[in-house]
Length: 333
Image (cartoon, rainbow, N blue to C red; front, side, top):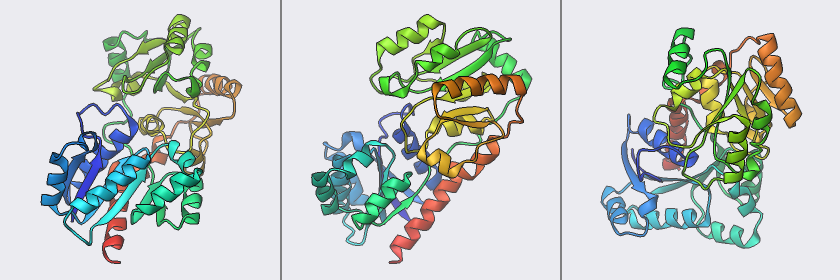
């Protein structure tokens, strides 16, 4: 099968969720299929469109936040493919898309360039797309279960020495951007006593300096850079906290932390609560008070932790296998 992946392939720094998804899926599909990576960041230059015409794909799959622009770019890629039977697929992985579906003008514009299939991670988005008569399906994010794996106590100690983290600290990790709507201020309440909070924030999106400064002042360690070996930061940690209040898609960082078999405390998100079961180290919290209590309980009780088991079905390899089945169905219709 000849598959064109339309996404952000601008560099190797996978410091943004949608970019990470596109690159990971492309890598897995390349094991069995011919792949053309079409860089959406160069969409306004002629080179990508010459490439897709020469490649003549069977399927063009766009990974985006679900913007209007991305739907029109996917249609244009189809036009330039020189294959009248090419199938178009859109993966949307951002809450922005749900708001777009509430806009009547945006609805009409998207419907005018309707792909053959739209993937989302939100049952609510599926309902809206069904109303608009889109062919749609749920497809989760995946995780690299080989890279993000549990480590021994000895390796954890070695990593703490490498990153200059106190051996006796209870390390609470969060990976994400400094934005006002992410409820990160609760981490300053976590910091203290034996708790050491580490926040790893990329520079891909704009960050709120006020939130960053408040967390740093409270004693949280702030690592605002791209980490080539982010798996090591998970490995040296004791617990992962995802306090973001609003969300309908599956956060990659939660899957990565669970793959490392860390206890995870997260606010309730549509995909997480519908696909994962609470217990054995996974705690859902309704409020900041519940986040703080869950951390305290896990530290005190020493829950039996088995979060990794729940995310093994979501390895990138298995997600790519699901995709291949969807592609084959499209091509046979």
